[in-house]
Amino acid sequence: MKLVEYLFRKVIPLFIGALAFFAFVIILVDLMMNLWNYISNGVSGLTVMHIMLLYLPKCVWYATPIAILFSVSYSLSDLYASNELVAIFASGVSLVKFTFPLLVFAFFLSGALFLFDDKVVVPTYAKKTSMQESVLNKEKTDNNNNIVVIGENGNIVYKADFYDDEAEKLFTVFIVVRNEDKSFRCVVRADSAHWDGDEGHWILSNALQYDMGDGGELETKVVDMEIVGRLIEPPATFRKNVVSVETVNSADAKVYIEHLQRAGLPFAEALSLYHKKFAFPFIVFIVVFLSIGLSGKSRKNVMLISLASCISSSVLFYITQMITMLLAKFGAISPFMGAWFPVFLFIAIAVVVLRYART
Image (cartoon, rainbow, N blue to C red; front, top):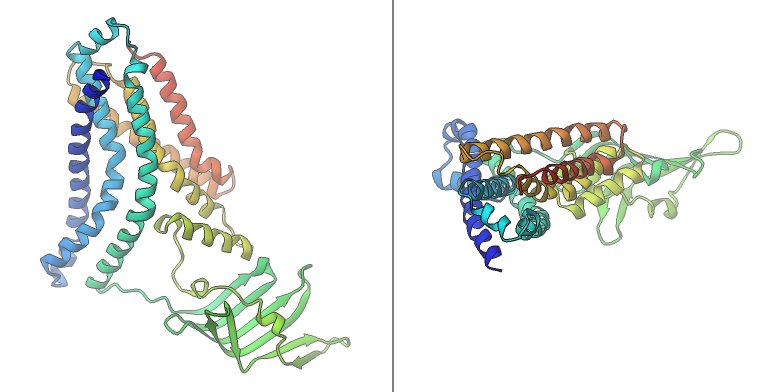
């Protein structure tokens, strides 16, 4: 227990210091990139500070893997350089046994990082982006025109000239309804449609239904209520903005992917990004695993070696995940493997590195 306490007394202060340093660097880079825009738009210092404060959780999320890798790698390398680990090994304690508490800590930190991203980073980063666009006069509208939306697995196709997001209203609407075998059933035309949140479907105004008669001619009739009850695509579907799975929480991302699947639209990229939300936090566990195996490779320049190892390992992981995510996007591998393969690969590499580590 004394060894565990001693180990964490060395790692935790370094981790906190490195986290603060790397997060500060990321904030500083963002500030420098937008500083001229802030000045030219006359944004006050308090507003800029508020924006940076909203960006802080995202910076902490970015900095955590690098900070934990640096703190563990430096601490263990320093213990090697000072021969303290030699004494520990001589007492019968192996490297795996000595560092196992760090692996447990990293595993739970990975889970905490996911929850932190889902509950804190996503909403604060959305507020930061919205506020920054507002003060820089880059506000976007969710209104949309010339919309085509596929719903109900392709059985219903909406076409509208314009969507007013504030009023949740569609103008000049055409709705093509198909049977389960994708054969034509009818066309509905309406001057407008507004969303009824209580009923959960669109209410049509001045609507007519055109059916194909037995003689092959179109017949006009009042719209069937059964069809109206099927017009359940939510207003968000008609907005101009495209949902990015990376910028919403896991619950909203799941709803969006279900919409893509229901509409028969491509969803491989979105699904791989959804899996990435769960896979990426495990980089914390991986980098600790790697740093345990890589530590002790040199007794000189411990600081430089630790920085080099943490940066190169992180970059290599990011590049690998970028490649697998592209493969998943184009269907070469499954969305699950696109997100999780780098995790499995680097855990295997860490096991091999640890196998040949100095003990």
